[in-house]
Length: 96
Picture 1 (cartoon, rainbow, N blue to C red):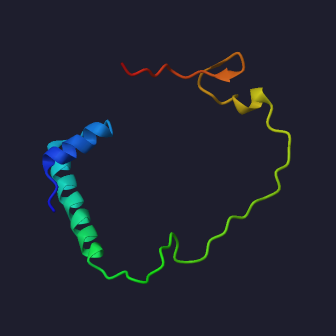
Picture 2 (cartoon, rainbow, N blue to C red; picture 1 turned 45 degrees about the vertical axis):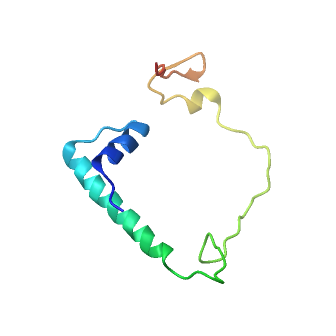
Picture 3 (cartoon, helix red, strand yellow; picture 1 turned 60 degrees about the vertical axis):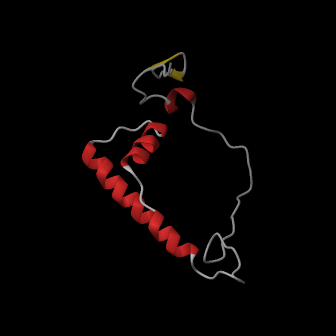
């Protein structure tokens, strides 16, 4: 299945990305290759194969949850480029 430039532009718009015409061409080719490869994988006989998320056993190692002192607020923000009233100031980000 071939991906079109129009589809790459649509995906870019959804992701709020801008691409040059050359990048659109490259991504069209690369995404088409990925979709073609997925088509090849779908043809494999997976009857009787257990679904897995990892090829080796994985287990979480949790440490005991303990309350410990943290950095003092002033020390934690001392390198912030803009700060005030004990907080890091950041620019407003509103999309209209």
